[in-house]
Length: 562
View 1: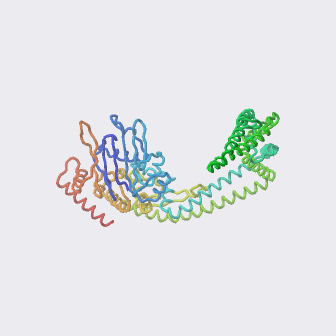
View 2: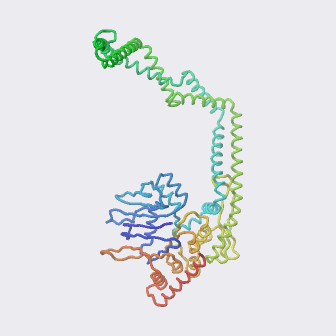
View 3: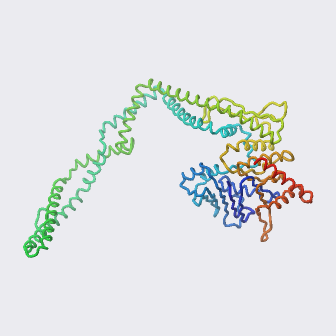
């Protein structure tokens, strides 16, 4: 749930910190007090809004911070993928604006805004003033149905998406294989030319590395010979007076006195070993120098061979192994083109098989959806009756698509009739804005037990309703609050009376400026706020008593639900 909100330098809010609780969190206040700023701040932190028009000109920076507590395994998985800390089930989303730029952090680590949006989609669901407009579009109805039947539909959808990709791949291969004879002949000629070019090179794995090593020796032969000659002169290759001769003389000098002291024996042995090593080195050096012969013809042939290999690398692969793999693929392709009709027939069978599998799974999914559609329609109708749609009829209509998609073969449409005798018609062509808002609330109520998202925000869902309908809406929200945390901004006393926690948003003067403050109300303060909503400018004792009675009635109703 959303445990806390911290806002700094957002419009009229200089700094505000709010601790929310479980159940129904109600926010009320005068028109223009800054309720929209709170929702705007939450949207900014979640990555779905921006700081534009919110940051005061005299502020160096702006900050919004949300603190969530959750045990949602999907959240844990997302954080693990990003290697982000997650302790005690707490998540802190921070977004800061400074110097024309905004940065987002999760648990203190800077993250891309796209990840914040993905993460927030698992933490909170905001139902804004215009979100009910999404019900106007039938394409959104299928998502609601699949969410309702998630346990049954998810395995099918996973399979369908894999089968759809396989079908599209097979379809593309079939279309590519439907080339004209002229195109096939052209491709075959080109492939045979490439095969001949690679085969004629007679490449050998590792050959390029050997040639490059030989080439380095050849082009640096003079430098190598000069260095070897200098080393040989110093160690005594083929001459006297070098290191070998000097060490030999030293060994003989020491040998003459070794008999006088046994400790000289080790020194003598060491000199003899050094003399032996230098002698072995000189013989190896002499042999290497004998083999080092500069051959212009060999250098030219090596250069030409390397040029050929590098040219083939630029066309067919970065290594000889890749070039040889490319040769094998081209030979296989030639084999297919030489037996093209058989190849096309195999592709056709593959396409038909993938199509049958896709249609079969899509048909099974459609049957599951139709069963759950009956149950969902029944529950939505019941919820609509609870929201004062007394003679409502509600159905979910199906239409089969001509071709399967990643979502199957179903197009669904919510249909409603709100008056006796009138036929069922698509939701978007019948319901008004206020009615759509209540229909969305009914859907949210039905989906509450299916939805893994713990926190719901309703921003002025009471638009266009009053009286008995408002009371019904408040009771439905109390039901949802039994399994979810709800944050709700409202102008209606009936809804505000249901609050488990009641917050007031109000403007106050401070340092010759007007600022917005957010504060939690006590039980008595909540009754006074209800009286303000009920009574307007003049709050009489009768209005306060009415507010108190409303609060007591709401408490009794909630006890019945919970």
